[in-house]
Image (cartoon, rainbow, N blue to C red; front, side, top):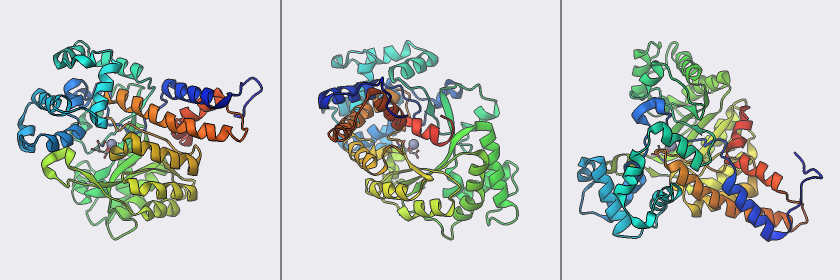
Length: 424
Ligand code: HDL
Ligand code: ZN
């Protein structure tokens, strides 16, 4: 779309700044491309409410270092409300809630119109208790100004699979992503599950194994209608190599993605369970070999790769790789990168190197309410970066209009992905 005569040029840095900030704050979010949320039909798999917010694993990591009077085992032996009371006292009352995950809880309470200054957690609990999950989902999507989220749907998850088996009433706000870590990370276990489900597979990949893995993926793809197929992979993941993951990618995952018409989404960089005592909070990060991404994109030019990397040290080279491979789209500031200082740095280098051909953020929400704070904070941070970039552009005499900024921001907030996969 080029600027038309009836679009008014924004005059000067102040009007540009005000317009960009307003648009980033008010643009409906087309799609949050990676979350761990579930529609109400998945029952207790959807986490929401005060105690879930406050016991988010990011806050468990923080309390394990802040209040060492309680060991991780003692913490996990507490009930959920006891855990929330302990975290609230340790991380919010006994010291200022200045970290991103703590500030996020306060942003949620504020956006719901609750008395944050009052610090009355029973009042907060009553607020949530007064709504059904359906009412609260409606509230959260409205407050977050979000149109759709993409779930993380794992056929190997014994609590999720029965929901699909029972036949799912879909909620159009919740789109699917087919998550298949076990095929690439724990094949020595995963192959047993596929055999149990009637697929003719062998651990040594002999016989029909690879075509059967492809059939497994296509079958679930036809059931879920996923927008992409994803796997979280270790920082030391290699491709290609002697591991079963290489033929599984080459002869099952990529062909299945092509058959389903969806991208493959390797999410690389986790260093699993560096501190097992912290359980879900015990994972860390490591720099991966960007060559893995380059070789995937080069070996499979017919397949699209939707990639997020966990290490800050991989971000610049991911941008360079994206400049080399049109079938590579970087997305989000994942997990340990989802902090204003790093979102700022990553968004700047992406805009400078890639223009608009990326997705600036995803929330990675595990708790429904996080959709409110993670996007409130990201809209502000990304907005500050875009103010600089549009002002830099306008200094040349280039005409900047509100309509163009709206188009660009909607793209960065997820429309670029939907357009890229033809689901725009
Ligand atoms: O593998 C993933 O999708 C990660 O996002 C993990 O779920 C991680 O535990 C997480 O919640 N990060 O925010
Ligand atoms: Zn995630």
